[in-house]
Length: 89
Image 1 (cartoon, rainbow, N blue to C red):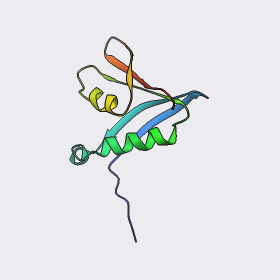
Image 2 (image 1 turned 135 degrees about the vertical axis):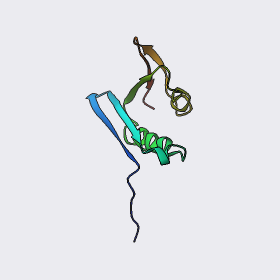
Image 3 (image 1 turned 90 degrees about the horizontal axis):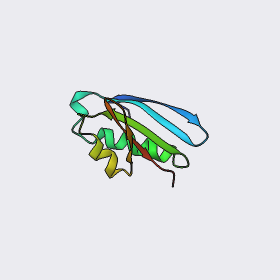
């Protein structure tokens, strides 16, 4: 029998029929170096492949390079955040 281990969580919401917004991604520290965030994001991207996906993150967070590798592009910024979008396929 296979089991699952909780490694973190994410929160998101469908904004409208063309947009999904990822609000928060949290990975338990011991899993952060094991590509868990990448796998979680790939799962979200697959689930919402037919609509745009937006995400934002603090400017000092280097996670933007990961988002770029997964197809997100710069879409703006606020006083403290960078905003990125992955356009639907």
